[in-house]
Image (cartoon, rainbow, N blue to C red; front, side, top):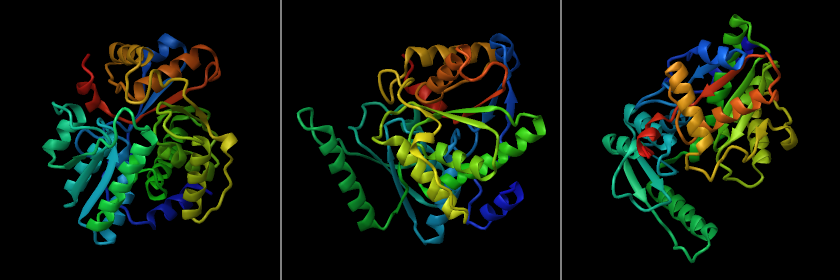
Length: 335
């Protein structure tokens, strides 16, 4: 499919504008000189309201659907420092919707980082710490989801999956794939690696679907920094198939072909900064004056640097790192 046809099909699907397109594709001259290859950042960190981030692309389609269906409230869930929850709250407020955010955790004694921003936005935050230390976490998690979905049904809220991971949300990153495809053509970067952090997998599925439909020569690589899901590659492949089908272009994706490195760069666990990630965060800040977040992008950036140094991303090909945002989390992990 050519770029014009993909753009036409995307424009046929309702969307509310939250992103100033295109986001910059920024060359990093000092880091590139230091490691001996061209490094670029795709700057999705600043898009959308309330300090931005990549989830704004997904919410353009999801919140358009909520408005089309006549909903007045939206509900989603995530970790205590969820960027997705914060951007959902801000985007909902911008569109006149009431945001409800659910957390599988007790309410902290202090609101910092994203939680502080949610409070400023007037989001309704629900803290549901089901179970105790003696109860299997899987059962407690099931109770949480049952309670959440029952609450959604009773209140007729529009439900947004964690991270916006859905077919509609994935369309936001098909749109981003088209945008990056055009930027790379203009810059002569068609042979680049595109590297990114992966949490729920929706962004990766959308980019993979988009690059596949465009027959793009990009080499895509996701760094799993969540280790949250069983059969994660199969889940991503299935979502990529559903996204392509929604665009009227069925395509088969195999779990064995998912461009994902699982668990290598998670560190001690999801939601916990890692020493390797913190070092990458400091390195980029001190050489280019650009900040990463400690939970997602810093870990993935560390992985990109390590793979580059080992020659596993080729030797001289350009690398485009997708900066997905998350900077408010810096103020929740000051230690």
